[in-house]
Length: 542
Image (spheres, rainbow, N blue to C red):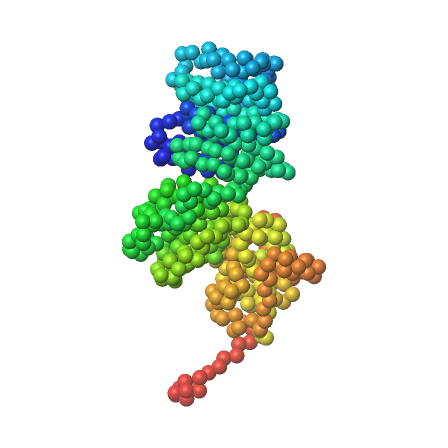
């Protein structure tokens, strides 16, 4: 949910700017205007990355002033593509060797350049060296007076002021600023942690929540930073761990079980409330296959924005979830998927079982990449051994091999039935499923099929139980075991077997032969059929 569409922010009547950290929760991301925020960074490059994130998060209608050392702001902003950032960006240079009096006059000096434009909201970024400020404003209440000057200036000019100070003395400056939460709407400190960054939020005020004591892990992004994890997200005063945000349909007509159960008629209503939750239990229902991707997208957004303490649950209202659908929900950060076969009391019991749990897996921040990993990377149908092995190899090299379980199956036909004759009975209907004849055996690749589902899958493909057609079978249900079998088959040569043109597979899923491929030659051969006659029928014949 964007800042412009958040209903709480819209009701506040304020203008808001984005902090620009990808995946950060709205109560931290929404910088209110007027407002005053101070960001400390131990390294200048990390401070620049924070500012680039602020610029990248600004809309095309935004007006931004960047106050910094001469030429530094302009050179750093040049790293942003032309289509990214605010519609208007002004650069203001700080003079060198500023004295204490110059620092204290800075808000007044900046006012001279804003006369006649006091009613237009504006983001003002002030980038300074922490050591310079700490040395200049070190007597009595100079630092406190300077903070309150900027507070009053922001109110008077309808501006959101973000002070970004970087370099040495960051920890000492944080200690000095800690008492000034009456003037500062937010104070945070970015410290290096290997290749990542530790973003310690000391205190933070927004129109959504007053927060403090957060320890966030950030990673570099294209422009700025993105959120990796929060170590203390659920350790806040007034935790909502006991709250349930539920879609009405999942309760089967039952009323809310207590004042802690918040029931909504639509899934959108649930998500709108959950976007500000910390550790609540959020339950959505699904009854149509067409709804699954939308529900997964909502859950992915909640997990990405709300972190690991929130509990996300999907209840199947009517049987519609396939194995791949469950994997999609799992990869999108869902804590629990409850099948349609469970009764309401059993469902409530499962909800009780996840209370107090934290989500521990990492999820891909790119929802579209997750969806793509669950789609077949190859076409389906009957193919030659060479194509079969090439496509299995391509699948093993893709993210799909780890995202969703699939099977490579080797079937040995019963005596009197050749592999080609068994192939005649095979009817593949799903994209991604393949079949080939090798070593006198029938090889199948069943995308998104688990070992426990193999028997019904074979019966559906051949129209008979597998035991009626095949005397033995072997399956490979992990990428490692499939890779070993493919390697063995490549060593064998992978030749022989019938080509795809003679396959009975549905034309919609069959591979198209190359234009220069020779026409296959089908040679008739005699087949002896043994007919068994029922004795009773034989006796009744005249």
